[in-house]
Length: 235
Length: 375
Image (cartoon, rainbow over all chains, first blue to last red; front, top):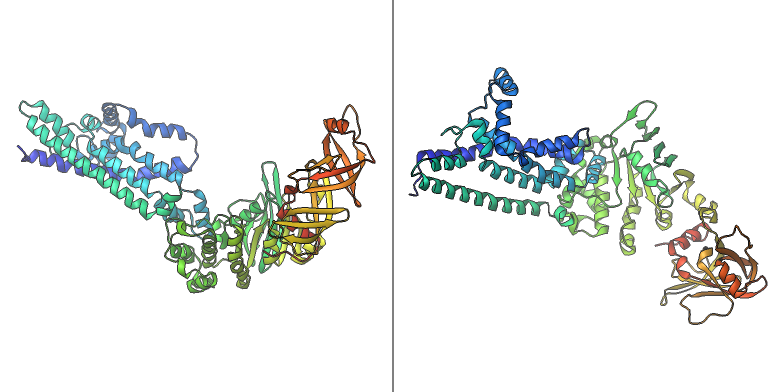
């Protein structure tokens, strides 16, 4: 009962693949968004903030449907992307990445924003008087000091992407080998008579992967905090 | 040579300063809130003046007329902040080296080794800021600023957050900075520091430069602190330091008419000290009081009792002649009636000694032209 079928192994591989890409693509954007929200005042900031948090409260099915409307081959953005870059998201694994990233985005932004807000901006002034321009002082002072939050954001984003179901199934459907991640495979297994042992195997895998990710995040977080010890001790 | 001419509105407050600072330490001296830090921030580029011109050694850093406004990172001015602002995630060594890369190689006038030796930082290099004492942090902050090879050094009350012992420990290092040969703008409200460190003084009062020039000339020739500055009524008493009682923590000040006891002040005996006594800190008694916690009870004659009238408030001023000074006291009208206070009466003045604080004393000591007290 414990040997995995080829489809199940494929689902596991695809899940990790999608979650890794979703985290990698979403993290820089999340840091940028967190920086804007933490450090800049601009018109419509509250609206942007609300929009960013939407996927957190919207039913994932709705998020997936909106993505389909927007990024589907006939959607305004999707059609343009296909014509201009030949990029297609609908019913592809790349679409699963987009769905996971959108849903995980607010979870990544929040801890990063909080840790950016905790960095004393006067340290950047000090860096400026020493000769560092804005970009350099941000990279060498603000970024390292907010690393704990960035690590937490990345892990949260990764685990959320790993478990993504609703938006994914709505946007890119449930295609084995292309868009069928672990959670989708569990769902499929339960739809077939006699599929329960398969669902159980996949469930055990998901639980294990999640535990590993959470333990890793805890250890990484501690390691980073130790690296920036003075800061966390003072804060 | 650092040339500063800046103007800036900050809410209702207006800062307007114009002065030059040659090589060596120039102190920006004045009370808290006089606008000293705003001036330094404008020089550093952290605060933009509404109008003005700032130049160092002929390099224009800011000129509103010419539309020049270099960002802080292009001004090449070292800034030592009151709270140090060391980078908590970097070791002392990496803090020190942070600004070095930005100074062009030809402009560097100090090596890491020289700075480490000058400020005695050898033992600290591998440590992180959170494990340093306040004095050590400030030494590192000074070294970090120097290693960026600045054209001038700005120091905003670098010793203000340190206790007396730490100040004593770090002052010699700051004194050595004079050898650097660059202009150093040193913000302080402590006369001890100013008289010890500075050659030139820029006196800042209410956002304006009240005087500037050689430290000794200004300190000896100018009345820095006068009752007119006080919004409350009071009396200026000219006294002389009679003796110190270190054990009891008391300094005895004598004047014609009596003696005042104040908390131990670091002023040599024999030096003239002027003391400001606020009217509301003086009480009046008709008999010699006993069992009193107040240390200063002076015998005198009542010479004046404030006028009565419908427009007068609940308190009134009374004048007490003690020796050849008249001390003003603030008492309630009820007290005047109950005690039957009237001119000619013999009374006792009760003065809360806590009001004669050390800073005030050292300030007036120097203003009176006596030998400067040294911390």
